[in-house]
Length: 336
Image (tube, rainbow, N blue to C red; front, side, top):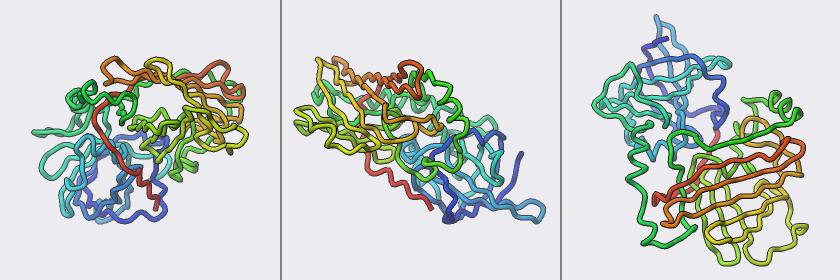
């Protein structure tokens, strides 16, 4: 489908645009129009679009593929969008909710193509002198950004960044029949992710967003960008677990074994694993292992989880982060 449209971007009235399953977006669509306003916030920047077709006007809601972190890292900053600009948008239309588009590419007024989906190639229907974002740019800029970690000698304690444009984390989820049924019944539109609530452990540590490890002596603070996650890991003598109320991130105790930080977490009070509705019980136990490279530029991680209600055998995640010298503030997830 192709539409010539006028973009009229307004404040979102309870649209619930949030980080969610993208399964409902299946039909390719391309639109062109004039930018009238913009909503720039997590979990996705978005637009409201008024489509003029044969004298009739139809409202479309457009949301960007990624979070503000991904936009900023790709150089897709708010100052590139000016009111009155003529823009083209390519993406996927929702099969479940009419008038909604998930944007993967935007052709800016100056001819620059902004690739919002970081593992994507440039949009096939557009030719431009320059593109920002996307797989090739992400890979090149990541390699150029690795800092001189040996000189800084900060060990584990810095911001760690996802290295790849693709979600390449190795995942093994041997689900029980009970978990499979519960996942199939999960509402992909009306759920905690759509309300912009933070994820619980272990999913809070497996996002493609940055994390910061902070040394406090007897404790380590772990900050996660997505959802403003904050965890405390006890490295000295921990308080008694029974005195710690269960919470989304659980109760964590760590040990440093050579160049590997091992963290044991239980007392996790959260009903789901990630955003697909896999159930979790109070029997969930998580072990994290973070191994620092000799030059301190890379942190490999392996996370394992056991929960007899959910997993038929041990579940696991594994990949690595790089030291890119990044910093991050609040997630600023504001649902209207």
